[in-house]
Length: 188
Image (cartoon, rainbow, N blue to C red):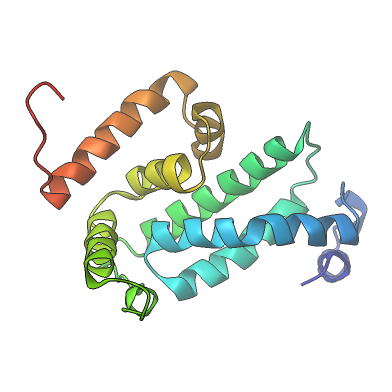
């Protein structure tokens, strides 16, 4: 879907006059190329479903374009994108709450000639453990450790207070360790 397509859809919906785009098509393509992979990975981890991540990724960028927001910096634009993705994943989780979660990362985790069996087993354990966690806990851990986001960026993406991020991360790490059965030395 291109910026032109979104403008056409908006015109058909009768809201073309209200839509203001802050990026031209080339700028959007460059932004998409820089961010799509990490947003998709984030969504795949949150939902545990690659197909749902594909759908949510498309919806995330569509809503990003429709937001008509102006951004202070590239980091602000990226945080807004992750915030949209988080909200969409949360809504998706609420809709599927009654159904059991499916983790469909197994083909991604299969052994390869250069991947030792122990590493695959640890990744599988981690995938299952993350699947047993709440979506917000997965989001916290993913943003902090896979994306390398700062506490300020995590707070902006998840819509929580900056002061609570450190405690929430501590609790999420402790829960992950508990699920994985990691023994911690006393005092740690």
